[in-house]
Length: 338
Image 1 (cartoon, rainbow, N blue to C red):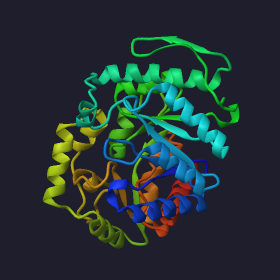
Image 2: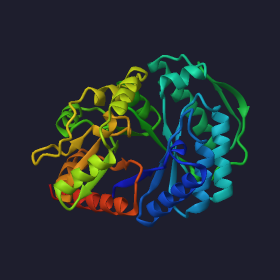
Image 3: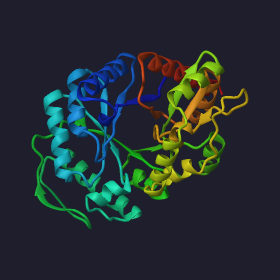
Image 4: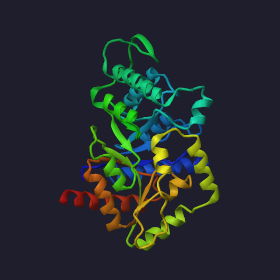
């Protein structure tokens, strides 16, 4: 199977200190054990520092690739390049960067950032340009842009070519797509139901390489939906929290998913695609729910469009990692046969 799978690290706000460290270590080790490529580490005003979290993961694993959510407002590009080269020096391992232009609007305002949506992508391009030049140049880098200026700046310690980071960017807007192409970053989308997704990508002039989605598959349709409703109960508080998040987000993907019809009764003819957890503020991606066959069949449709990377939700158990891997193997075979 030539699909790169990433899990997601638990949020530091979800557990007490000891429980958080144990859960972070468990997910990292089990993800590596079952052949997952890497692990996404969230970044916002309420969470533990993603760079220190990445260092912890690198110290506990041998191959797992930390993918750090990177928002320009938090660090100067030189600081980011320095942290990447220092992690490489200490662990002889690369990392990945998930480039983020936006985030929670209130987080950005609290940090004094009032930059308009499209301008944040312009800033992200400059920001990443500088990081890439510092990581690759053996000489001093001079750069003069609208948002950043540096003069004859050299990175020490230097980063070996073999440990250069890989770049991803999350988003659905036209500006996000243009930015991904400009930075040679792999575009990650939060997919709509496949019919809408395929229509919106029928005549695309870029190639979507990845999606962010949750998987909950069981031996029977009924068991899958029973477990799904138990894990993600619908609550009025969750619904109100999502409505508040919708008002404070200017992300196009968030608006698209929020405006999708919500299913989730688990009936025999219920679509596999489910937005229940997203619309009750329990996770930030859609889910595919059902028995192994129907989830694999739905997933294979996305894979056929050229998807080679999938960032999954936070895994609740090792069995979940195994079930997800089984679905992807089955979906890949179906996509190849088709």
